[in-house]
Length: 77
Length: 225
Image 1 (cartoon, each protein chain N blue to C red):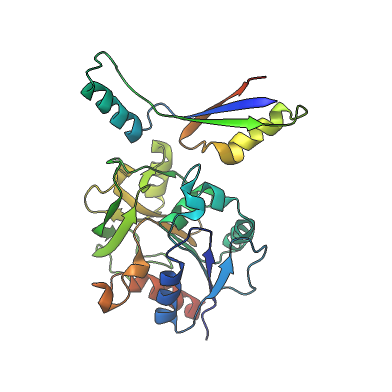
Image 2: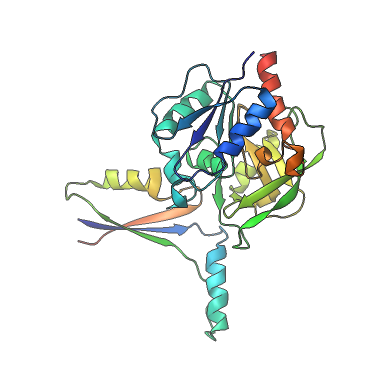
């Protein structure tokens, strides 16, 4: 089973990387971009028997730092 | 009385030897060197130090892998028992990732690696790490980090400040840290995490000795106990 975990900074947490990318987009002449946030995509290939609780546990214990980050689990196939 | 300290080395630690030398210079006893994959710490430790560096190459997030390494379970248990634990730079990141200290350390607001000596105000002179500093004093300690931007929510920050758990503050903005926080203590006061490197300021040859009092305070607290 393929799993994608999308990790992103919580709203309100300053994202310097996103700000730098935003600045670079403006430099390339792309107007009308209001904000940029950079996150992380983690792809897992897990046994089909892996349950949701285990996936949540992986996210909470390691993949995301819930002090500053949100995560979303997506089952691809 | 010998000062039994341990310095933990993770794959990618690079300030572990500096930390060991600083502890030995101040206490007179060489610390025990412990590998991250060890399951247990030596008995009867007086002090545990988590050094700076780039544990596990900072993959995923700074300190995240190291916080889950086998030795950290043992460090957590000792911390709960009241053994003093000092985490510097990457060690601070490991302590927050391990849940031993609140908050998180994010990429510097400037996106730049910062390597220079900074001025810090000593905000708490009551802890076992900071008792050797004069109240209201300003000290100069080197920083060298890419991820030193301290973040915690307002409620947590208010609690830390209210309980006197902000140990050090940058006297001017350094890396984007909220409220210019450079170092924090746990609720019991036996765990200190800080981004600046006190072990790089214990010998006149380092260009300053303002870090020395931190290690002297820890050694003295043992003698008193």
